[in-house]
Image (cartoon, rainbow, N blue to C red; front, side, top):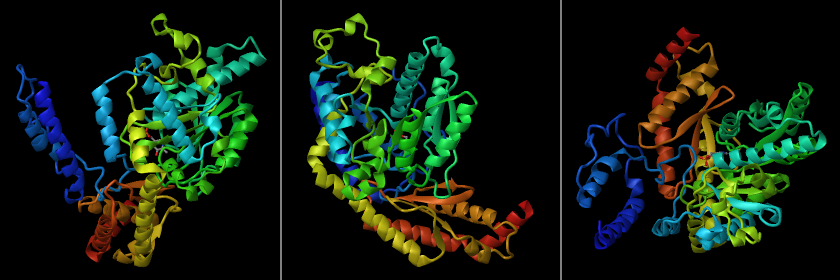
Length: 504
Ligand SMILES: *Cc1c(COP(=O)(O)O)cnc(C)c1O
């Protein structure tokens, strides 16, 4: 492809991007394809000769697009959203244009310096203390929350072992590592356990209360028990907005308890942290400034394209001490003088993309007020949705709706009424009926997922797509309502009930 061909196709790509996004709600949210659909449609051998790019784009339209799920559609209420905005997309284009590798300051001073600035801006927008980004602290972009949590565990492990050695110089670091234990709750995102697995460390999931909240007292008990066994508790993740129900752990209590025992406390605010750009959410976030580290994914609910997790650590040296290796080819006078840092010393990979550019474009284009408006728009929609759920009467709301996630299920008594004969196990019947409802909804033009709340099937509805609006929200509700009518229709539930009775 020569430069003029690129210009032509790039202009067309921009038109395609706008047309795609502006009409996304008209598409089916999920593709109608079966596993391995793609194999039959494309050649098994790579092309021996250069192909005309127009044929490649034609295949993109005819083969790839039909296999896509449309995350920014207002009919997408699964998981948590992933970020999109036009300025962020422009950031991706300009980043791709520069095609740099910013692993050190020398490789493009603006890459490092804009990252410092945007991370500082974000911290200020979220209400984070300066200790997270200035002095000994550092805000840095990671590829994902999982990487951010992994890096903080690496730092905490190193700091803990050093402290043990300071007390007793005979401590063997490899031996000491076998006693370390990481904590999170049974509602914490799997990334904490995954990080512990990768590092070969012990992990313990602590039980939450019936509102999915990890209490400080539970942590304290676990620490007592494990210390009595000769283990060394050293890291705890507290979540601000869990994945299943968006619950918030007892962060002030956990942070205090962790400090008391010399445990590193990390706040995983991957999803809900974005809401903190609105001051009205700050009262939910008590204690976050007392922790050792904090992460939020701008690439979920704050208009920035994947990948963009902000990690803030108060003791940046702990992280660098743990992993920094500076070979001679990475030495240069600004580094040696201490005037700059190599950002590769804060992450797994050496190479890094210029991700701060899309953050900077997005913050400047939206301003604080625009970002607040985006979050509040979704809060208005979920409030509207919730009032319809309440008015219907057949549903139970299973979480505290603090953000834009609502978890619902058909009340067990409606499942019983619909059943021809009462089921022996009402919970099992309710689970079966609600699982059926999820399948039916997903076959009817909305995409959502179920989850498990202490043995109960719950249906998660997240209203947070770039193209969520009143129309799409009403569509979601109309589909749920119609599918509920169908699931509770006596003929269907007779089968449901008898199946359950046989099983029970
Ligand atoms: C989404 C999510 C994660 C994982 O995010 P990645 O960036 O994909 O690693 C971790 N924690 C919470 C609370 C999340 O919502």
